[in-house]
Length: 367
Image (tube, rainbow, N blue to C red):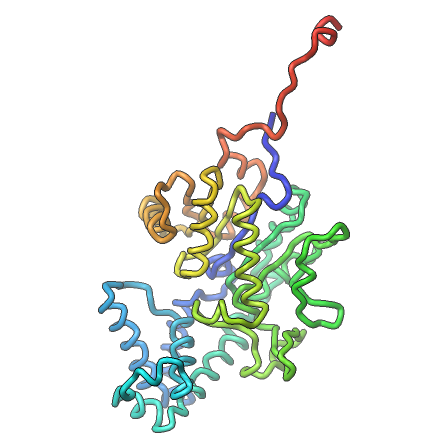
């Protein structure tokens, strides 16, 4: 008897690598674009020294801790700018004797350049880096619709991306992002109920380029992204702010834990680099909580499966790596050729059938 996935037994997590095939740069790619602007654009030239100082400080701190390689990206840069902007309002300020002498020199005596630089970065992200012809370039995301119909249950997709690839490509099904009829974010629309109508539940864990927080503190969305004030754009950078007390971010983290730890049998990560400590903690807890649970990681063409498997095992603090399988292919290739129930069933070669076989009675044998 063939195994069939039941409701909520499949959870998908999308990272930045999932949208690279659509032309959206990942976090490190955005740094490359920023450095081009600093070297070419007059508007940006005044922030070159500030950028070099902050980047060097982050890399230096990583070196002290024995970390090297790909730790610097656009999210860490903006998160650091946010921390520095707090100045004497930062919780650690009373424990710091003084700012490094170089910081006021590159950021201004009142540190005013920090906010201006951050605003320019976020504006560029909103207007260019995460904007594209979704109908043409993100069409491969439409395979999620086909998979959901084959699955025959609502599909829960968590994403760390700000883009609109899922929403724009999955118009053939109902995608629930968490907004009421009044266009106000409301966690209750994600709550399971008998009258569920959504085909895909989309949890945007870092926010979205079409979300804004209004003066009353409520999260809404706009059809025209360019009309959103950059300061009100509801996206977060890095891991520090994900578990802040405000929704929807705290709720999203709870939901990822809820669905991976309770009913999920297969967790699929696509384009996720396992650089988020909070997400890694949740995934590690889920896998250790049930040794039959599996993680399928789609890690990109240029990765080496053995090295990535060891890295993932270490980052998730797994005692063994048998629960994890790595596929070295792009997100587009995975969606187009491997995202099907038949392919995913191969991850459970020894799975028990969903129903116990019943031996025929003596009366039935006679017939």
